[in-house]
Amino acid sequence: WCSELNSKYDLVLGLLRVEGSQREQIGSMARDVGIMGAAATCCFVIIPTMLLRQWRLK
Image (cartoon, rainbow, N blue to C red; front, side, top):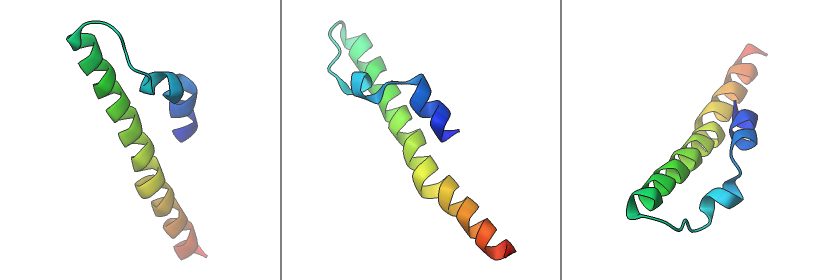
């Protein structure tokens, strides 16, 4: 799931300033916040949960 997130969106281009209307800028910012939130969820929730489950099974 995490690798799909990185392959679908180029974070470097997503973080660049968007020129255009205010609505486009807000939409771009909302998308970037969503991408970063999904990445943070993957790093701080999903991966540790998987590791703890594997550790408990041993």
